[in-house]
Amino acid sequence: MTLPIIIALCVLMLSAYFFDITSSKTKIPPVILLFALGWAVNQLAEIFWLEIPDLSTVLPFLGTLGLILIVLEGALELDFDQSKVSFVGRTVLIAIIPVLVFSFLLAFAFVQFADVNFKTALLNAIPFGIISSAIAIPSVSNLLAKNKEFVTYESSLSDIFGVIFFNFLLENEKIGAASVGYFLGEIVMILIITFFASIILAFLLSKIKHPVKFAPIILVIVLIFAISELYHLPALIFILLFGLFIGNLDQLRHQSVIKNLHTKSFKKEIKKFKELTLELTFLIRTLFFLVFGFLINTRELINTETLIWSVSITVALFLIRAVVLRLFKINLLPLVFIAPRGLVTILLYLSIPASLGLSVANDSLIIQVIILTSLAMMLGMWTASKPKDEEVKQKTA
Image (cartoon, rainbow, N blue to C red; front, side):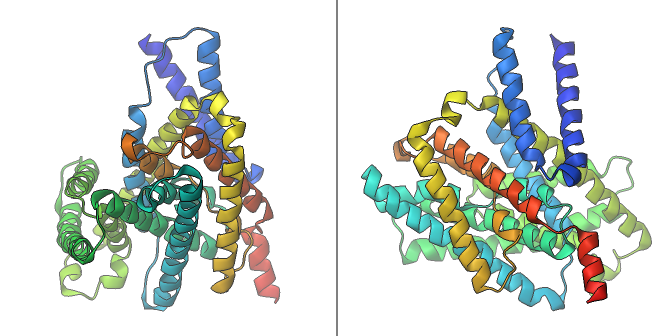
């Protein structure tokens, strides 16, 4: 049985790689094909009576690891300097406002139809309001550089804020001055941890001479994340800031602490670290969406009872997004459509205790919203201008 599993995994991963390299031509986000591939494997397994172990317990593990690597990969690719402070500030607001507005509106709807208290309704609404960087970032690799940068910042910040907002509600039975003060203290704590950990990890990255050096660094990053999460600290802030720090050492080379690190050999090591992170992210992200597609129940996918909810939620998501983008004077196409739900939505949904779950916010609703928003993103990719075409227009303007 071992060899057939190895063969199947290799074929599936190579298929995912094919989807990735052809997405620029087909304009189909790879995640949609991964969902379909995973679902097809499940159907074949049922037809041929193949015994496959329960994969539902693997999903949270792959999702958490994937989230760490995806945010890290995105942060490593971002260029940040003083000229981008205004851009980043606007992107922060664009990332946060829709999460808040949509979550509160959906929570009000849940209260009306599910007869629950507002906090429980809000807890169930937040996962639907968060953009999935795991889907958005790899899907926009062929857009203009400014659009890719915007999507990377926005989706990463949406993930981080959404997770922090969700955990804050989940961990505090009552919201008051004490809980807010404690929360602010947690943010200060993670910023302190990020400062010292980033310098230490950068130092190790430059000084380790052993042939195996990147794997321990990534393991330490995951370890810091896990321990921070264990103590309810907003650990994704550490991942984002560490990635920005390592990816932008050129901007900090005049600082006394960085001068000793900033060498030609260290630049090469950072480049290798980025490449390894990219490879690992591809593997974990692919496995996650294949497993999720495999676990999709066909009856849940075509559940007509939740279809009205899922369509309404999807329409509301994009209407709010369009208003916010217009408010901040951002071109709507193709960015208005690039707001998929996915990995974080699933992780937070699985984190809701059974006692706080809502019957209306079920597996069917989650699956349908993820599929609908992914299809909308595919529509957005079809409306996108090619980078080369845009460059020619700018030159001739």
